[in-house]
Length: 319
Image (cartoon, rainbow, N blue to C red; front, side, top):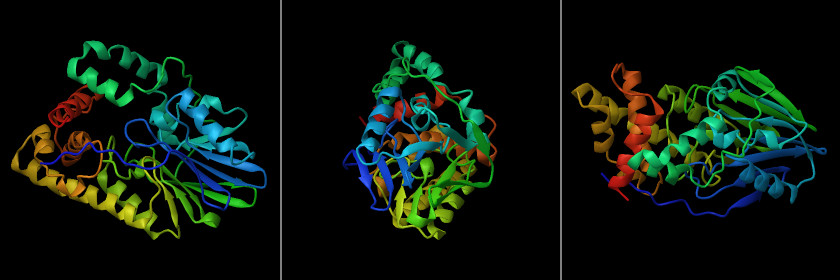
């Protein structure tokens, strides 16, 4: 099995699409280095996601201020993972909206809890070393959190000047409350972590069929510009590549589950040669564990400590 830890190469900062929509990219797209979006029209703006801590969020906001002075009236969190919402408190005077599932999960995964997790890292051996590798670039101690003001299920819209912005719930998939942000007038989509480009996806929730269906939903849309949650801007070929990865891992995991192989052994044995250019290959451990539970396994762990330990072992094997 070839696990790859090569990182994506692309430019950091703001990308302008020429129609009042923008992306803010954070290479290398690995752990914590997420993307954000800005939709503007008529002096109004909608922000898609914030960053993992205050400093990175302020850098993102400063980047957007260089290209637009539109006032941010709405902030959409595509899901509850901290690298997409921990910077919410940095934006004053806006309404924050997320799915019901995302908002509920945010109550349980705060910057404070992650700060405590990181404080414990030095005593956790290899797992602690891996946590520092994943999250050591971020300051959770000095990051406060602001929860969404409004929630939705299914589908809702927001108006930004004359532009309609569609919010489409597609979770549970990557997490329990994933949403897409679609700007029909700009033929632009912000996918949140339904898409990882040049990096391995990680399935914290599932079911995987929902995630595959979300990819199919994007492919069926009239969009030209697709901004993933992590990695460089992509197109429908990139979406299909993620879909195909999910289907491949699902099939490989099923074969091993049916043969009686344990989840961690299965994760170690799945060949990822076709995805050798993607980073963070150790996430296969979480994906297989989630699939095993989906298949009916009663003894496959779901707690973060064990799963990060499994990923740490794969990471060490291929360092």
